[in-house]
Image (tube, rainbow, N blue to C red; front, side, top):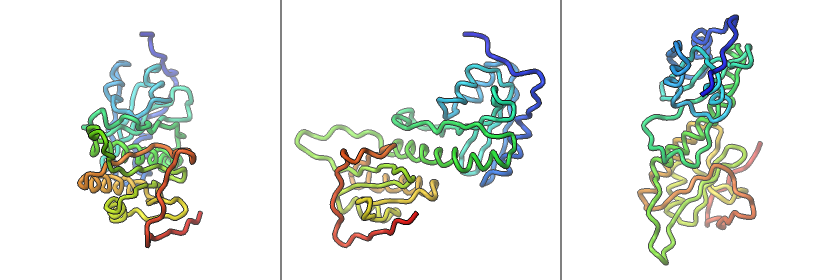
Length: 257
């Protein structure tokens, strides 16, 4: 393994100070844990659960960064903060994956890759809140859904299993498609609303944390009914979508943007 690149000796950025002020700017209550690395290998001990396969992962592999900080919010959300090795006016921030979850639950879930943020904690907090945290909420909802709904055995020949297909739309909403009345009732009870334009039951992505909780609750309720759920990370092309007709008496929502 080649020797890691090192940072300039005159790099004056302080991860601990930046992370401490950043925690005060982010929404919610956070605690900060700072780590100083004596060796390059030490930084991997604190970065094992960094949920990134892009810039942050590359920086960790190629550079001796010297220090990092973990930010922990009351609800269990964790962020990883370290120096940006190629831009002295920036830091790198990534989400950390939930612990105690079976590896299979991450299958098919896109990592909420970290971002570069300015050294100004207030501006950095705005970028994290607008970009990283919403993507983290979506990925976390998918992982929790997968953990609560592990793959089921194949149905017996000649049988057609009931299922609900949930698809993330471009605007961040989640559309659920089903033709089964019990499944529709379960979706409505967890906050999904029939949307005539989408021809599906839809829950808004305006509050990604609330949306994630609704997805988990709906998945659990459907599982108790013996109905499988399929969560898609991206919308299917229109040519592939086969959606049911609107059920009798279904409510419609106005779509304004």
